[in-house]
Each structure stands twice: as C-alpha cells, then as structure tokens.
Length: 136
Ligand SMILES: CC(C)(COP(=O)(O)OP(=O)(O)OC[C@H]1O[C@@H](n2cnc3c(N)ncnc32)[C@H](O)[C@@H]1OP(=O)(O)O)[C@@H](O)C(=O)NCCC(=O)NCCS
Ligand SMILES: [Zn+2]
Image (cartoon, rainbow, N blue to C red):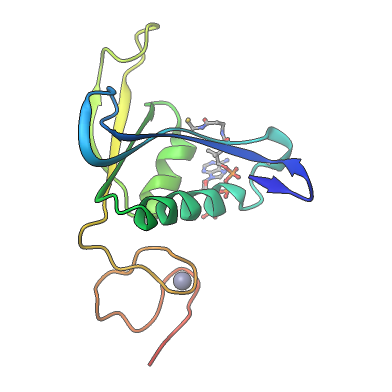
C-alpha cells in the first residue's frame, strides 16, 4: 500500500491454501496485514482490508482465511468489522506457545456496500451501516 510514493502498509497472500498452507481450492489465505507504525490508527487498516476483500472477489475466490495471535485484538476486531468470523483456535500454531485465532469470510453469498465495500446485513439492505450510503 503506497501513499505519495511512500510504503504505508503491506499485505501477503497465498492462493488456494488454508491457513496451515494445506491445499484448499477457492480459498485466499491472508498471511499478513500490516500498516507502518507511524501510519496506524488513521484508517489505512480499514482501507487495506477492503482492498484485500476486493482482491479476492475479483479473482473469484469463495473464501478468505486469515490467522493471528490470540492477543492481537486490533486485527481480530478489524476482521470482525468486515464480516470475518472465528473458525477455530489453534493452540499449537506459534513456537512460543501462543494460540492462533483462525478467521474466515465466506464470499459465496456475500453482499457488500457499493460505496465502501463493507458487508451488508442482507441482500435487501437499503443503507450501509458503515458509510451510510443509501440506494433507494
Ligand atoms: C492491525 C493493523 C493492520 C490496523 O491498522 P490501522 O491502520 O491502525 O487500522 P485503522 O486505523 O484502519 O483502524 C482499523 C480498526 O482497527 C481497530 N483498532 C485500531 N486501533 C485500535 C486500538 N488501539 N485498539 C483496538 N482496536 C483498534 C478498530 O476496529 C479500527 O476500526 P475503527 O475505524 O472502527 O476505529 C495495524 O495495527 C498493524 O499493522 N499492526 C501490526 C501488524 C499486525 O499485527 N498485523 C496483523 C497480523 S499479520
Ligand atoms: Zn458503505
């Protein structure tokens, strides 16, 4: 993610694997999501997450999986805001013994705001609860 020629954030993906890197057709694995410390809490995490979901949709993925340390509340909250849910806790993932949280977003029947790309509650929603765009 580049702003005025400066790198402010970075995403890493692996195509068609699960979080443990086992083959999983149709699944995009987000290995990492990062915003440089001096640019955090300015909305770039949100922008990057919306872009990641768009990246997956445009390439026809039906699922997104990602994982993080159980203590990383910020990225868990950010993913939840975009509709990711917790699939499981993997206690043996990190060598230091901290469990990882595995989160997924199902894209096969998702409805997103045409304005900001965030999830709508239903296909019939008339207004976005995030950016308040409406389309009556
Ligand atoms: C997680 C991370 C990507 C968020 O990026 P960011 O640019 O700071 O995020 P934003 O400013 O867009 O905020 C996104 C959301 O994160 C959450 N958040 C941000 N700061 C927070 C804080 N201090 N405490 C709790 N939640 C917070 C909020 O839900 C926020 O949404 P809001 O718009 O409702 O406030 C960033 O903190 C980061 O790069 N962390 C280090 C790398 C990392 O841990 N990556 C994840 C594992 S790979
Ligand atoms: Zn919106």
